[in-house]
Amino acid sequence: MASPKLLSCVLLLLSGSARAFMGTSNNKMAFTTTTTTSSRLQVAAADATTTDFDVMEYIMAKKTVVDKALEESVTSTCPETAKIVESMMYSLLAGGKRIRPVLCIAACEMFDGTEEVCMPTAVALEMIHTMSLIHDDLPSMDNDDLRRGKPTNHVLYGEDVAILAGDALLSTSFQIVAENTKDVDPLRIIDVITRLGKSVGPVGLAGGQVMDLECEGKSNVTVEDLTWIHTHKTATLLQVAVSSGAILGGATPDQVKALEKFALNIGLAFQVADDILDVTQSTEELGKTAGKDEDTDKTTYPKLMGLDGSKKEAQRLIDEAKESLAPFGEKAVPLLALADFIIDRKN
Image 1 (cartoon, rainbow, N blue to C red):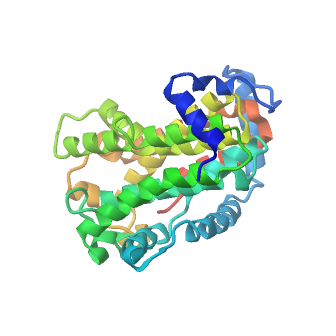
Image 2 (image 1 turned 60 degrees about the vertical axis):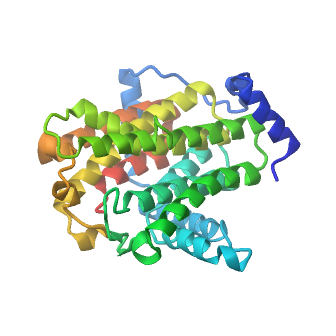
């Protein structure tokens, strides 16, 4: 059960007075958001350091811890809940790179926070992401039978149970953060929960998905339209992953803003890379149906910008993202390496 102090803070937030929490921080890192020649040199220096940083080893180490936490996150407590919990866990544990939890942990650790502090949020992020995949694959949405190389949730459990499993993962995500985040100012916890909620709302994942569906088959969709779609459908949750980790680690408001800019750019680059992979990789390599975007006449970056133009756009976004982290120096190496991984991945 949430503590009385946390509940009182919720009431404070609802009264409109809680946003002041970010004014103080124990973190002593010097910070400026100005992009200068000096900052670009800092990026280059940090980039050089990333050549000695094994990003795959880092991802796998964090993934192991995250997977264990996911396995323990939901259990059936009575026979009546067995089926819904089985459906939830089937998709939650179906594999994946766990990029959102890893980004959250990396951002938290950049401010000397710990895995333990941000793990409930990391779990919540993966639950929300999994919900979005279950719903994305439904016959009424993308109508896909394959996800991560396995049958999609509705194929095994039926469309009705799949919808409810997604709903249950979403609601459980907020419960996990509220009940299990320890040793953090409750106002920071509330800010994280608020950001998670916004990320799936009308100006988040849901709104982006609706716009994406409305643009299918249309010939007048612009790059600006596509950017709006994926800022909200894809990038927002990555942005919340990074900003939440930073908040839980003790970042100041200006530091959080810099990380939000970084994460918005890598989130858009993530989608550009996804669109490229859809036309360059096989179904076996992707673990999901290749060429699906073209089959459904979706608007994608390769469709509007061409393959070469899309690759250049992905690199531009990553370069801009890295500049946002210049003030953090070598502390940002894991995040810089993860940015490169996002556009270099093969699935």
